[in-house]
Length: 206
Image 1 (cartoon, one colour):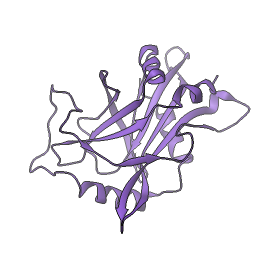
Image 2 (cartoon, rainbow, N blue to C red; image 1 turned 90 degrees about the horizontal axis):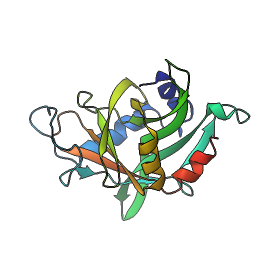
Image 3 (cartoon, rainbow, N blue to C red; image 1 turned 135 degrees about the vertical axis):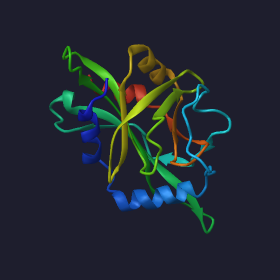
């Protein structure tokens, strides 16, 4: 089940990079991947494979997963967040050009029962192909798909509920692979987020 609540919360706690930076960053990323002559179509094959393009990114220094709260006294307003920044070597110096992906995991109430369930929401760059959606995969496990909610000047948001089994896999895993397509591209771009520290950060939501 998709929650616009989660998507609205993302932009309120960003890293100060607005739409202009996103547009510039995405242009630089698009220039490094193969752009096909025709639009991609949905496939029964795995979204993420050996032919996927890997975006060079890095998290913030220190613990990649940070707890963010609207009200520190109310844990129901908290979530764990990881920001990934695009890296590029300029004059032999590796530099961060701007935030490429924001990943948010939170517990939100289901609209039908009101029971708090775990959800993952991600803010991806502008210029993605919205039709096939995005996918995530923990290490070499199974993929799950995410549908886009909306696009704003800050990027395009995807979200879905994740069950206890998948949440357990994230706690035990090392890498969360995020796959999406640029508009007009045949290859999938993959961003890898570390899961080290995720379990510890998630405990702080209880």
